[in-house]
Structures are given as structure tokens and as C-alpha cells.
Image (cartoon, rainbow over all chains, first blue to last red; front, side, top):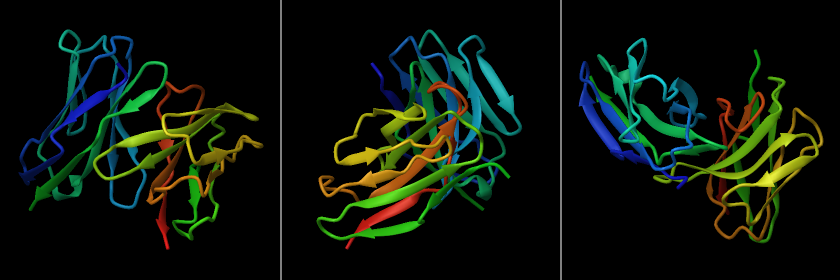
Length: 109
Length: 113
């Protein structure tokens, strides 16, 4: 009930492409869905977050899409750049934060 | 600048030895956390503390211990009972509760000699 399933495990795109990372959850008590970005040797940093009363949120080139009925949410990165190469984690919060397994994104020049 | 400081960045443990990882925050956050990160397994919660002098076990607390004597500090001890301690350890904090966005330190990488 507390799991968050994230896919794919790794993703390679060309510069300018639109990588999409998907997450699914089971616990309907989750009510806050953040995404974190982590560079090698660094701690994760909060990138963008959404609450289930909205279906989409944009911040710069990053967009979260949220489908409450399907219990799924996804991260889209528009016009991806080599500097976006990092590991991305989705998470969901009910009584506490539960993380997905992570997606290693590589954006080739 | 406010933030979370973890030290050391790299740490080596001998067999049968306890080691302590330091975590200090100057964000005036009430809650602090320790996570373990292994490749392909995301972040797993070891211990968390919502107030001084109180802490709770997370999902993988066996072989670890913590203390919270000051609001700013939440050290983690990896004991000899933890048979597979090699991992990247992350400390985090949040303003009030476990539901708040969490700010992370830059981690300590622990290896076995």
C-alpha cells in the first residue's frame, strides 16, 4: 500500500527530446507528489511538486501530469539538455514520504 | 546560506567497528531524517525525528542507532550489527512534519575495509 512504482529505470534521449518518467501508486491517502533531481555525489533536490486537485503543473521546462483516477503521475522535461542528465525520483506523501526507485536520465548532445 | 551539512563525505569501516555519521542543519527545521541509498533501490528510511529527544524507526532501522539531543543535529551510528553497511547515506530535514518537502544534505559514502 505504501509503494510507489517508477519507470523506466533508465532513459537515454537526444538533446531537445522530451523524456517522460512515469510513477504509479496504490494508496489513495497520498496527497502530495514531489519530484526530486539528483546529480552524482549529491543529495536529491526538490524539483517540482503537485497536489491531486490539479491535473498539470509546469515550472520552466518541467511539467507534472497527474491522473487521479488512474493513480499515476509523470514528469515531462521539455527541450531536454545535457545538463538535465541526472537521476530523478518521484515520491508520494501520506503520513510520510515514500520514494520511487529512481530513473537515470542521460541526455546526449 | 541555510542548509544541511553531512560529514565526512567518505568513510571506511573495519569489521566489528561502529562508525558515526554527522548531520547538522541551520534551517531551523523540526524534523530530520536518515535515508540509505543503494543502486536501483531508491531511498529507504532508516530513522526519523520530529522533535528533540524523540525519534522513530523507519523501514530499515536494524543495525543503526540515532540521537537527537539538539534541534540542529541528528547523528547516525552504523553499528557492527549492520552486516551490509556499504551504501550512500543521506540526511534530510523538513519544517514540521513528515509530509513537508524535504531538504537533503550531500551524503556520506560508507565503505567496508
